[in-house]
Every structure is written in structure tokens, then in C-alpha cells.
Image (tube, rainbow, N blue to C red):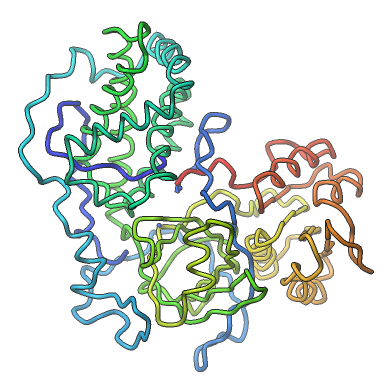
Length: 506
């Protein structure tokens, strides 16, 4: 599901819940997984601002900057979560408008009773057999009904949310004020999950990550059943003659599976980690007029791996979350670095680049993404980073340098429109000067310069000939990543060894 779940009173759809609701207030602290759909199945809920973030060495803090980057080993156990929030504000010295602590605006906003509201009329009991797992016949019926609904998806989506807000107005506050982007995600994700019901292992893995990531929205176990009822009602209206009792039963079975996997995954995650982290901005640098490097200090240990991303919410656009990649490998001081490009009509990115400053407090969801190094495979690498997409690529190079490259050769193609857009080139060349196994190829598409390759990134990497036997990592604008992936497979990279985060869900 690409949006937050909604809260409700009635729960006629019988969903097997785990061990209780995952209430936001129950877990201390406070990350479109953000989860990863099964291959070839899930509509990429790629963040509205497809700006995987770029990489830069954060400004060292006066008294605690590390002398060298140390890559911690992959943790064998999940992080320990403190039993409760501190009584005092987390950042009492923060000069920004957005302080965090007991009684702040976030605490008030998220403490609302999203399962309350006026009593609702009891709904009809679900049909017999709705709690059984979906069958092959159910999948056939779902795909047939989807063929009817998809051309009318905009109208069906609008009706879906109208039903939710009409019958459960108390949950409207869980959604962003402007629904133009948000409204499609939940409905379309539900449809895509239903379409993949015959790939149970892939679907379960996807829904597990999605359920864990949805905790940051304030999703509770009790939200799933009302969402299912509204989904069924919207589908019934727009499926026309394709909707009958057998089709309804198929949808209820599939949605029951979706809700059960997601809610149980969320409850399991609640045992070991908070639903979100609060992070103070301690550094803000403009690297170009529209690219900023943010250094963040989370309120507690934030586990992640190089190549992954976080989702982030600002105080200026509540309940609007956007993904940004980590620009460095994990640091011993716990600081996090993100690169953000302000894009046209990008609410969050423009706020982070042009408004955020030291002392402001942001919220982070859990780390997500599968674009991480496979140290056991040990193949040579070819990496493409376009614009701020160079961020996770640089983090991967840092991890290799600290972990031990294991005999690997690494070629990094770093692209921008013009030379002044290659703001991380000096950092990459510095890494290459100390690591002879690393070769950096700067590429510009709209001008020519001595020492730089000309053209688009996918064309530049193709001109180098065969990349057979390599693992490939790509990050940047979606169109570039797709073209680059095709170019690399044509150049000999095995399709299963091409890694990127397009298709990750939030």
C-alpha cells in the first residue's frame, strides 16, 4: 500500500490481527518502504520526487567529528529501543521553529483517537469463506475485474476516499491536506497487491516491508478492516457486470491476506524499533543553487546500510513523506547525511533546500531499500549516479573502502547536465586517489569539457563495451535508471545483478 491506513470504528471485514494494535504512542521515538514489491508485480510507488539523494561528507561537528570512517558490521540483532521518551524536550537548544518533545505539535497531532468518532451503523457480516486463503480461481476473478476498473481508476479512487471520509471522518487528519498526490497510492497499491496474489512468497516479502514502513503514518491494526470495506464498495460500483458474489469473495480473501501480513509485520517490528525517529538538522550547506547537503542528528541510534534510503517528513508539510538516500556509509558518531535537490513543485525538497536550517527537527521513517552490497558475491562493480543520485553510490564506495574491497574493481559513472552540476566530483576523485581499484568517469550531457565524457549516462556506459560479470548499481532520475539498466544488460550484465530502488514502495 502506498499510503497510510485509515482509522475506523467498525471492522466487518474479518482480518486476523496479531497481538494488538500498533499504536503510535506505544513506541518511543519516531521511516513510499518503504517496502519492495515482488519483481515485475508492483506498480512502482516511486516517490513523487524521484530524487534519490546525493552524497557528501557532512561538516564535522566541533568536538565529535570522527577521524576516519568506520563501517560497523551488519548487526546480528535489532537495535534496542528505550522504554520511554525523556521527560524534557529532546533538543532544548534547537533555535528553529520546530522543537520536539512532550506537548509539541507533532505529539498533539499523533495522539488523536483515530479509532474514535461517532458510532457507525453496523455493517453486514462478510460472506462465508472470506477468511480462507485465495485460490487460483480467485486470482482469475480479480484480474478480470481489474481489467474493468483500471480505465476508471481515477473515478474509483475518488469514490474510495469519499467513502472513507464520509463514514470515518475522524481519520481525515491522518492524510495530507492536499490529496492530489497521496490519494492514488493506497488504492493503486491495494490493486497491485491483489494482482500478485499468485506469487505468495514475493507478495509476503513485499507486504512485510510495507507493513513495517506504514507504522510511521500512525497505522493501527484496527484500520485495515474499514479500508477493506471501502475498497470492496468502490470496486463493486465500478466493476459493473464483472462484479458478483464470487468476485466479492475473491477480493475479500485477497485483502484479508494483505491486511494480515501487514498488520502482523508491523506488530513484530514494534517489538524492536520505533515507528519513526526525530532528527535535528545540525548542518545545512548549499552545494549548488538548488542542491543542499543536510546533516542530521537522530534522537536515538538509526540503523541503516549504505545504498538504502529513508522517508522524511518536515514540519512545514505535515503527513507528506518523501524518500531520500543516505549519502555516506554509517558513521561512528551516528550522524546522517542527505543530499536534496529542490525540484519544481516539490513541496518537501524545496522546504529542505530553501527553508530548513540548524535547529529544525524532522521525522524519519525506518531505512528501506535493497540496493545494498553483496559482499559474498564479490563481483566487480559498475555504478551509475545521475545528479543527486550519486549519493547512495558514494555511500556504497565508502562501504567497500572500509569493509575491504575483496579484490573488486569499481567503475563509477557520475552524470549531470553541466559541469557545475558535478558537485561531488572532487569527493569522488579524492576517494579514487586513495583507492586504485576505483575509477571515476564524469559525464555531462549539455556541454563539452576537457576530461569529461559527453552525452547521457546510459550512452556513456555503453561506449565502454562489455560489462559482463559485473554487478550494477544505479540511482538517479527514473528515466535514466531505466535506460541505464537496459544499456547495462545489453552490455553483458546479468539482469538479476542490476540493482536499483525503482519499484520500492512507500
